[in-house]
Amino acid sequence: MSQLWHYWAGGKDAMTSTTALAEQITAQFPQIDTMAAQRLAWHQRLVEFLVGEVGLGQLLIIGTDLPLHPHDLHSLAQRIVPEARIVYCDDDALVFSHARARLRGTVEGACHHLHLPLTDPGPILTEAARILEPGRPVGVIVNNLELWDDHQARRLLRGLTTGVPSGSCVAITQLTDLVHPGPVRGMAELVVQHTHTALTLRTVPQIAALLPPASVIAPGIVPCALWRPDPWEDPVAGDLWAAVARCPGPPPPTDDRRHPAARLPRR
Image (cartoon, rainbow, N blue to C red; front, side, top):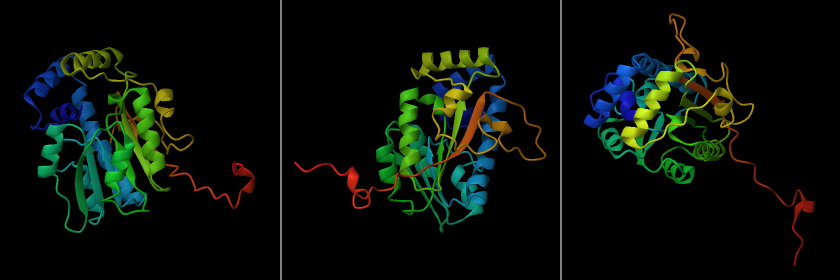
């Protein structure tokens, strides 16, 4: 999906086969170009919120986009805080090679790239911890949640949100079929035919079930164009939805000395 969104946003680095698929989808679903522009604008508002408003000086991005200056997430973050530390993670070899070659951070900050499977949060957090400052909250951005089935998405998000320090936030985007059901379902069929990648379209309750309970930040789970739009914007709802939630952080360590009744009996 990263290569497809890159093409629809005006990029030139997608593979020829991806470009052909993107053009076929656009012919059936012309609103996709508008949604790609909305996605770029959402990313900018999101980074301004996480870094500028919440004060998170480091980001972990699951699902790297192909380079598209000036919309690259590390550039947006380090424009606000030059010392910001950014870690991208992706399992697409083409995306990873382009990102490592062209996405460079500031001298004051850091911009690193991980080539790892995106289904297991453990190795992602372990490798990211080598770059991010320990104990400091993190803004976790999970792009294209529709690429994971429910079991994978639940495991990934639970692992990420409980594995980062308290005070962290997780942001997600999710493709739905709530506004243009026919074209979106047609797009999903084309994607699976050409890439053998199934897209999991979700409703709002299904998205909510994947996020930490009672932690979604206002305005909630909404089309990305309606998530804190700028005053001069005239947003139009699309099928790419977004949400930001506060992470509960790791569970506090248990101390048997304070809870002697919880000890297991000696054998």
